[in-house]
Length: 562
Image (cartoon, rainbow, N blue to C red; front, side, top):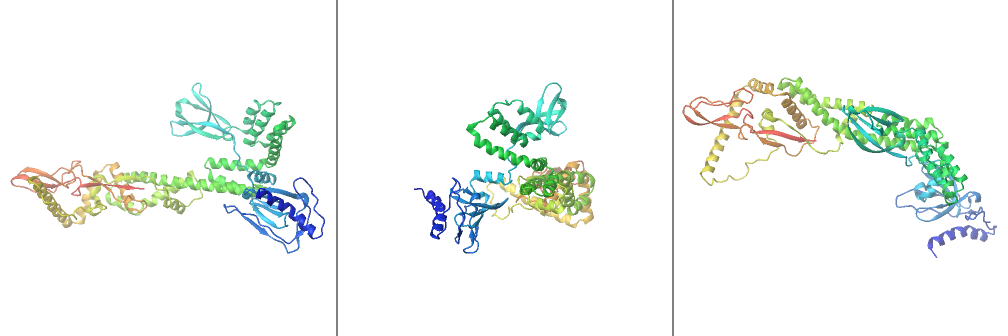
């Protein structure tokens, strides 16, 4: 015999045998389900627990004084494990129920998740813990992309003439085709987001025969999908009137479920409004409405559903905020850099702004965007927390361009490998020897220029910076400011090394090699100015002139950040 069957038989016979042994009358069967009369037993029983860790604990009364269940209230409960328990349900709440066992009178706490799914659903329906997240009727929708960047999503009822006729939110909207850039399929939305409940019921009722039980059954199920439970009850009753014997138990169960939901129609509609607000990203309104549910419906068994819905809204807001803050921070960084490039006409003002105010302005701008578009409940500290925990995806980049030399040599070349650590390679031929000689000459020249710059006054150096900054375009200054902020503010994660490209003017040498015929030669600076650091050479030959584009740095620095 199957061990599980043996266990059921033992549970049924144990109270009877024990009572007979105590000289009590036998339990008369009260129904075919195996109900038995009362007895007093000192024993206890505990339910098996599932691997999921669901709760199942036992509470036992005083020894020798435990009362068995009322025989008219004993029920058979099927567990997910396949085992069966008989007892009286003495209490229940949104987390589970308490069962007085028939076998020994002990009381166990049984989580809903331990029950067989079909019986769990039936009991939750019976006690009013209704699942309001049942599958809604969905419809295919399209999105109209307008020329001004806006998007309109709904069901396109007509494409004739000069207008699209768009259905959304229970209303019609005429959209001129001249304002539409393109249309795209946007997937599916709940039908109640597009049509009113009355419209949906009228559309489906018109196609259902009042004397066809299959049509009436399908219409009743559709009514449940559009959360119209009063009409669902009406059509389930119609199915039973037409006496569809083949599915009568199923229809009777569905009818009871619809009746229970019809009593809570206002509460279910209220919860759906919260879900609609969540989908529209009106999170503050959705949270406030969810928190007001308990006050609006103080006796409702759906209060737990309202709390769970509030938690889903909070999670949705959390996910949106994390990505919204990340994108906004990057966008505001670009926007503010361009604003600063137009505002600050001097190099000193731009650097001071980057060091002291840039980061604060970005934070304030992101906070303003968050409160305007997502939630008014967030403070600047919350925005900083979302930025700090952002998902770091692809890198952005910014370059100092021709202004790399403004950083100074140490900063301009920071993060690059030292190429001078290896052993010098002996020249293999005369050309290699000439190249090595030229490199040594350039190195010596650059060292001389560095010493010359050190001897110049700070005011002279600052004048050079300001002259160069004034000659840069707005775009060049905006790139420089953004690169400086990204690299030195600490707000971003930088790639482990920068990208250094050779100066386009000198090819990365830092100097120009010029042939002169006895006159002083100066390398012209791009943009018209001519300070080259050249020296007079009385005779012919070559002369080294400091590159006026990179000022001897030889590179343009680009950094990557995220």
